[in-house]
Length: 247
Length: 341
Image 1 (spheres, each protein chain N blue to C red):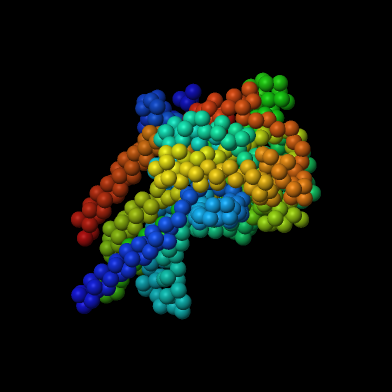
Image 2: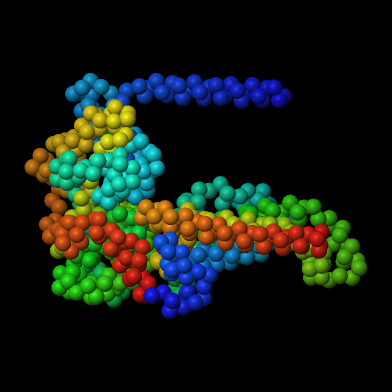
């Protein structure tokens, strides 16, 4: 029944019948794909913009810097359900931001894009707070030395600053990613929860519990645990490799 | 420094212990834990006050009621996992059956112990539309018209959503003369008109009323009237479809817990009081359909529309035990409808 679906062909780590009774249906792998894909995308966005935010906060002094600095931590403090409801209200087709995007044909709420936005929101402080302190440790003199030796700004960034930041950026990436994979509260409101389209893996766990199917819920949870662990292990290996190389 | 800190810690622990001790004393009177589902908050807030007063007047005893609300399935799981509820008042018979089967704390004959299949109130599913009904939605068939967006929660996670689905199925069954292929096709079209499946009935209500999304909300009748009260009757209209489903949210005493705690007498009285004139009047005032309308004073009996109602025990569904896995189980019809898309 499910073998002909293109979604399964793209994601063939397990066929539904391999673990009988565990309810490893097509929806399950689609949801896993969505959960891990959206989490990776969100963590990637956070690495870029989180590093930029950290850079601005560490290197520049401007009025309101303390307020921006405090705002970075907001996603830590805000209950995730509140964040989810607020984001959905903003990005719904008739919300403040969603209303501006709707005429352009861009739908955010109730699409995978909405899921990524919610995950970006909750993950940003992880990158800023891991990269920031390392950035503060970097001596301006090192960059000045590079400049006197004839390095361009881009070369300085690439060969001097980035190698020092790389391990912290990887840690921030791993933290933001790990948080995003398991996130439920903020995503559930903006996701739309349409089966096979915008259903995240943690929602499937809730659905299995709703059916009193504890084994099914455990199977999905175990699968997520294994996948998360494997990915974090890879990130950790990369980190130690980059420390040896640059550190 | 460290000594001070430690002594502060110890004294605060002592203070906390003393406080909890005090709490224990304050609760020396009977405490009833009542576990209910989401949209009954307003009803049980009023009912609990009435029952506490009634119990004091008739027995002289003070009873305290700890009321808890949440998704019907999640509440049932909490009881299964050990929450020592005295009474459960849930959205679906199958949720109480789950407690009975998995823990044995509720006797299998629970449904026959109180009148009307242990359902002191019933409700049905109606349409809530924008003021003036601009899309002219009058019957279930209108939901799949071009350009109509339907708001309903996810039947996998919401008890209310299952009633919505079954009511639509019932209409299609009559419409297509029981041709299951055509009924499934209609259900598929219906869910293709749903832009978002919230996890609970209250979430869908907010999506429709507050976020202004969709043309029609499939809602509990009592929830639809609540929206009129909360968000203003000049923004929405209630449309009663010619046919719908009779939802019978059941109540039961959790035998295992009340016998262990010695609260059986008050727990049984609590549920029986739901069937009294006062209980039925409160039920009517909260826009549910009372099981015994003859007990309710005429001015408190709302003019609810006449709808042809079918029950879950009708042969087309065959009761919850059959309908639950067939429609909503893993690989059931709801799953098939989405996999076909």
